[in-house]
Image (tube, rainbow, N blue to C red):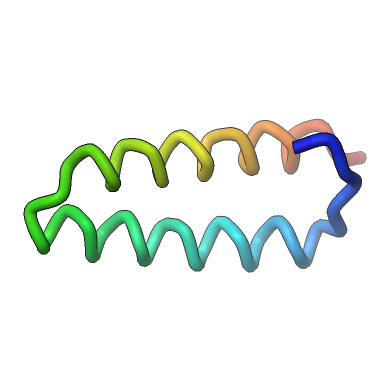
Length: 51
């Protein structure tokens, strides 16, 4: 990701990407869902590193 994000921005991104991943799964697009979940995981890792 390379840039610094606020905690609020990270939480918003996680929420949005999770919703998109769920929609992709419902629409039968497992590859898209998996990619979105990887992005969510990266944001969760970034959030875990915050003080």
